Image (tube, rainbow, N blue to C red; front, top):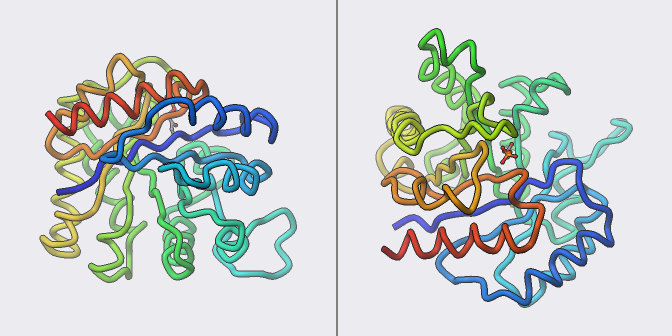
Length: 255
Ligand SMILES: O=C(CO)COP(=O)(O)O
């Protein structure tokens, strides 16, 4: 039985004060125990958030990390720095980082290894662009990204990874993938993990859907057998909406 994960990706939103106010509001709501709840915030807000979530079920994640532990890499943040700040998760290879910051499957792989080696849970993002979808290349693209991103990991390590399938055309567009389409690709990703790392790792690895997930559609994804939660951008920015996502995921998982 895989515990679903609802992770908010705030992207470049919220000052430290805004982040603190968000958690204060979220703490007013009852967060269910059968859903892993994560907030991935800008680096600056992370230490304050770690303090604010003490005693709650919320985990804190970063949105990127450098693959080296330290060195002359101006502007970068390392795994040991995040760990020392109490951060538990890190998003790796988000399509925005691949598009705007030249991340490749190779850098994703190095970052995943660094994260796992340093005790962070990586949320590894994969997904096709519209042109690839329209030319029937979705499975080929995500298979390649999964294979390269997880290259060289042990089956035990893969079991602890979270994969987020985020079709790029669905991100921030309001054009979410249907739950059936997302299930088809995510079950294919699980099969790819089984082929590469064995059935046990494939049975344990959690695979989220991301792309225009809202409180109104989250239940349709959670109802799918292979979809283990969601990575949410816009709808994670308001505490009411984020709380509804977590509640709906809990209700869907229990049903
Ligand atoms: O990119 C996303 C999460 O990482 C999805 O963003 P939206 O939920 O705003 O479409």
